[in-house]
Image (cartoon, rainbow, N blue to C red):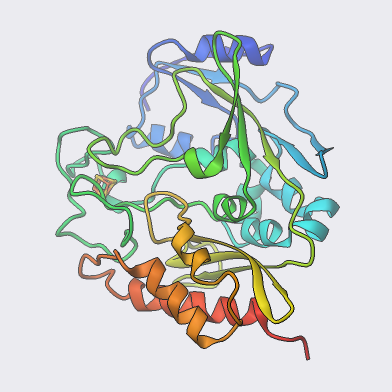
Length: 328
Ligand code: SF4
């Protein structure tokens, strides 16, 4: 690990100002950043410690919830309001990492965690995300865990979060504080960037911009929620494919559908065409197949991950059956 300066922020405003300096990074739980620093994939000059900031609360807000950036994943998954009203979120969080990691990992840090592409962690391999312009060892390499949607010739990595996939299906908003004191609200759907020619730029955050909260609107009434994760082993593994669904059926027709996907793309993935293929239709195989067609119309495999395309189809259709079947 390379040496770095350490600064403990006393207020959110000070944290944002300190982190605007070149080479500065926020640190909270550190469950991803410290690993990356030990491997010298990340070499910050300054760590701005935000763990003592008052961003630890989950508050009721406009019928929904306002979640502090530092709320640990474990606390969020166990909150009675989340369990009762946002079960897709509780299940997604509990499907990720381990108990120890969830106790340390924070809400904002989960959104900002970096890809687990093998080559990103191997500093001997070319990687445009780690070293822009250096090439991509994954294309033509071992691609089993990599993306089939939203890729570019420069990067085919996946975003690893489960929590973010559920939050995307719940229409979450990221609330931030900039170094100049301005605040902004960013729809989670607009928060992560696709790789394009700049895979090292993963979000729309500006230098020093601090996530302070994540807001969830009230969940749609009468909607069923589900998180289904397919992975290589039953725990402590990233998704090959995951589906977060929030679906309501009224008078025999699908009235509300919000579907987000993990393991398939460089960011948590949501495609309005998938939901348009479902709204107003009977909850039956024809509509489910149409949704899968819409999801995968532009999917592209890279050899060892070709299996993700039929797997995503089967996982989506099975999820839609569970979300819409009449209880027995
Ligand atoms: Fe790096 Fe992305 Fe290529 Fe992986 S897929 S080696 S993260 S550029």
